[in-house]
Structure formats: C-alpha cells, structure tokens
Length: 228
Image (cartoon, rainbow, N blue to C red; front, side):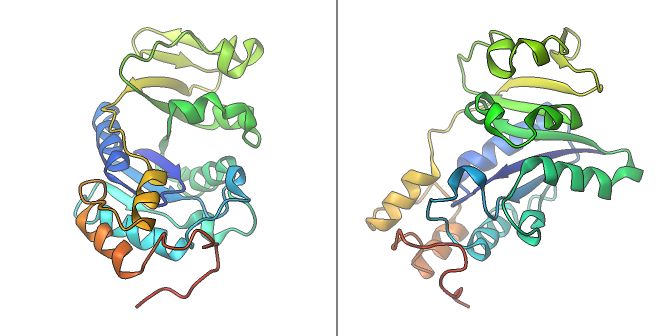
C-alpha cells in the first residue's frame, strides 16, 4: 500500500488543499490520502483555532465522494500537543503488517521550517517526504534546509528524482498547481460576511454559514457546542 499523509490545521479545508491532494495522489500513484487535522498544533498554541469537531465535519464533507480520500482523528484522540513524528509512528505501527509505504505531504514553506519540529531528524528517516512546491521553485539542495550533516546522508537519485536517505526513504520535491487560497483569508472574509464561494466546497460553505464559524476570533478548542 502507498498512502499519503496530509496534515494541517484545515481551518477550514479549502479547494487548494483538495487540488494539491489530488495531484499528489496522481504523481506518486498513491492508493489513499489520509487527511489528519491537528488537534493542538505546537506552532499555534496561542492562536484561536476552531474546535476540532467543526474542522472534522468540514473535512468529511469536502472529501465525500472521493474514495481515495479518507479522514483520521488520531491527533484528537491523543492527549497533549499534536506532533507529526508521533502520528507517523502510530500509523506505521498500526499497519506494520501491511507493507505500508507512507508519504508525508507538506508544503515547501512547512518543509523549510522542519528544524523547528519535534524530533525532526528522526521524522525524516521514518517515511518518504513529498514536498509540494509552487511553479518556479528552484531546489538548491537540502543543506540549507536540514543542515549539511544530515543532508550528507541523502543522495540524489536520478531515477526517483528525489533524495534517497539511509533508511530507504526519499525526500521528493514536486510542483503542484498553485491556487492562491488561504484558510486565514477565508476566515477573514467569513468574519466580514464576504463571499467565500469557490474558495471552499459548497457543503463546507453552507456549514460555515450555518454554524456562524469565524465570526468570533476568540473561538478556542473546547469552545462552543456544535450546532446539530
């Protein structure tokens, strides 16, 4: 099996997320892409984040009908801060008997900040990394991103068009269609009662309106009771 693991806050999930996921599915010939929303992301401890329940419902609505897309609440079921290294280890352990090849999907900005992540060096050796890049992105090598010592353990493989590491996992850089859509802009527009049509799926748009999401910036995890 070949799975893509697509993490993020998804507050809310939008068409840019979906398009990128679809392209990565095709590029790497994946069997599935698993959307894994962070429950308590370490880089946003002080930020207002929409309760997990709402973000879960929006993801489920957005991916409904695509049999290759699935959802996992693994980070919400784990106490404390959400760390990617723990999520990857959990999934690899759970499916260890099924010969799972795991591709950790993230954007180039997130990858450039990888050294701020918990146990990032170990994480890079646990699975493949599929870095989504914008058109025109020029990869100058790994040294400036992960440092010369660790970068020396990754060798460029021409056939794979990626950097093969000592554990047999590869770091790939792949260009995807860049849709200039951001969750922060959607939240801002929703707060100002501006239109968000064609930025999110229609089901998600209706959900945001129905539940008055993003109208109050002080929303925090464990906040208001979800509307039924």
